Length: 333
Image (tube, rainbow, N blue to C red):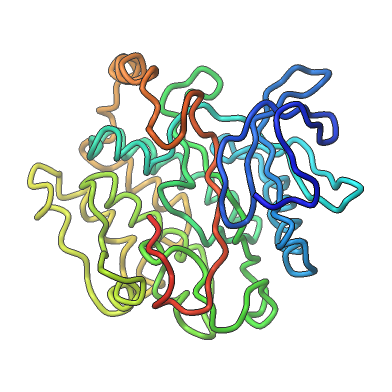
């Protein structure tokens, strides 16, 4: 990764010493680090040097400020922020040992309704707090939700990566994006985000969360295709295959909640996190999650991290910047 000054194990950023590289992405690199005095592990996100422009700096600072303003237990915590003398920008956040939901499905296949409800309920709460503070995440997707055992509670879900966060009330022309660019990941973009003058709302995030739920329950994407442009067309114009056609054993109440999130019209989706949480708790499988079963699962898989993370497991995924032409974009999951 291109930094103003190369970084690696043993290098220091503020009060943190880098232990190892966790992962790299279009916007930067995430390192595992340790606080020099507190001996507390942390994940350091460092912005790539080519993004240290006026716009890149503004986006990075907005991400840090947005996360720092949130205190929900299912949102990743921010510890610190800094800039090196050479201009390198970084921030320190909670280190999460676990799997993101993309890794989880690749590792373990489709998830049970009970576990899916538990995950969705937690993330709906995290989004509810963000929305109440006037923020929309805009990048809800499986890699940006981490399943871990934070605070000793197994199957704790954490929302991460606020790199595309935007104020709900900010005029479209002032958002930190570039005109004509597709912002987000094609498989997880709400239809209204594809319009030139999109109106963001909490429903924008809930659409993407519905797509995450669809993926968790079926191990399939609701909309897929051979190119980003094809997928984006389907997001705008087509309905997903009914979940019960893919998972015949799935209770109709949970399937209905997922498809409620996937309404093309934002006004017909859940309008706040509490409404979605209440609907999830009314589902037949809502009380079927079992802590002992979760403990057995974690014991069985703890020593088998996904192939693309290496030992220690990746705590954070990194958002890649949007590209100008949807037809040229790689299809991300």
